[in-house]
Amino acid sequence: MLSFSQLEFSLASSVPEKAAGRDPTLEAVARDLLCRQDAAELAVRVRVEWSPRLRSAAGRAESRSARILLNRRLCAHGADEIDQTLRHELAHLLAQFRAGRRRIAPHGAEWRVACSDLGITGE
View: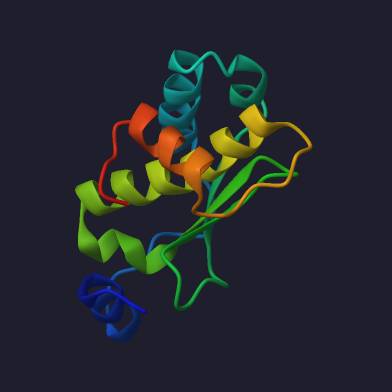
């Protein structure tokens, strides 16, 4: 079930969009957050990109490539929403990194611990 903010995001039209491609500033933020969690090995691999293909999701994490994709229209929702989404997706990468090859639930216990460690609650 979509929350009100997700519905608002998915129905937004004519909002400014970020240019597609890598974002070195957000990658630096992600690397700093990961290093603080003793995940330097993951930090050196992480990539953050603005994706023109995301339409209904704010972001997506790809654990195999250590890549976070963000919806370009997320910019219309402000810096706080970008930070929250970055940390949400980063928690997916961190949880999988900690679990190793073991399969984990996308929004399971390991992910919730990673969210807490990255400073976001109530996810």
